[in-house]
Length: 122
Figure 1 (cartoon, rainbow, N blue to C red):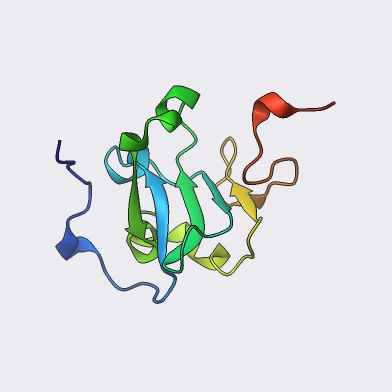
Figure 2: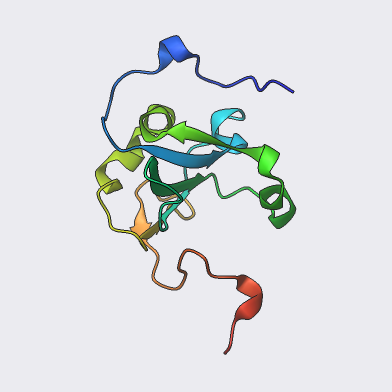
């Protein structure tokens, strides 16, 4: 099934360069929600920036279906939500979110990329 993205190729402007690829959910690229959760994990390959972008409205079931996400140039996601740009140089392991009515990202310190919620050892 072909996806119908909110922005067309002609609407994507060069906001940033040379950040590589990323993964973003369809809630951002198709449904048009802003990025409200972003994290950087170890890249999968030399083209991957390690960045992962979510709207925060994805359920566990939604996230388990790879058809609900896509691989994009980071610049493409910056066009969907330019508020990510100031954080893109953050190192692997960085996690940021917007909560409630906040319109600015804040660092998340109680979650790390690759962490599985079911493995809490408290």
